[in-house]
Length: 294
Ligand SMILES: Nc1ncnc2c1ncn2[C@@H]1O[C@H](COP(=O)(O)OP(=O)(O)OP(=O)(O)O)[C@@H](O)[C@H]1O
Image (tube, rainbow, N blue to C red; front, side, top):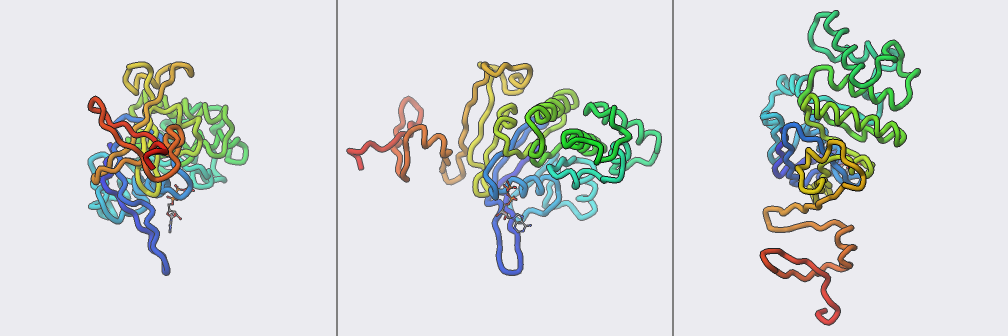
């Protein structure tokens, strides 16, 4: 569904150039649900904006749903933004019109003309996100979590194949975050929608099958959730907290470099810029350089 290869994004202002993405590689399969994490300023939102066609990438390769985002004309890009992707933002002012009801809000982006069909689809979507009881309420009368659920219904209005969410649980409590996660899982499992979620919420990210960490505009590591030996997607269904087991993957770049996370380095006690490498039984062992060696 998504293929980024050496993706670069440079923001140019009058005085400075900021390289927000510095050759990012990422592949996401159709029907996958995954999280993107990383420190503030690492490039997460920039990546999401590129995937959503909201800003043009500067260099590299970017394919979404078979479309080359470098080659889309302005007209094709408008079509892409409306049909291929749906966006859920943390800031609900960006998702919803405050003076419209939930039912009206969900119909705003719909492209087809038939008013009856629009209303019917909006009702179905609001039911899907558990908001049937609030269809005639405006933004003011809804909690943050409820607004977020309406925002998900809006993002689904034109049946996107890819749903992008930027900090969807950033402004809600843990219980509401779980409810939102359940909705995403349901959309992913039942409708096969590919979902990419940018989050700061580690607990939320841990519930997803795949967590990719971005550092300095590049993919730096990846964690896959496994339930014993079963496939990742199986593990998303009804696992218990105690069965969870993570496997950490680092990205090997074209120059043969691997970036280890701070947590892994701390775990093996490395605090400087030198590590010991050994090839043992076809595996590479990385360990702390012993004092006598230094
Ligand atoms: N429109 C812009 N113009 C100039 N620089 C920008 C613009 N948008 C982002 N940047 C810069 O690009 C870098 C990456 O920003 P980005 O918002 O993608 O990071 P992020 O990981 O989403 O951060 P956060 O978690 O704080 O939202 C930062 O240095 C940021 O200042």
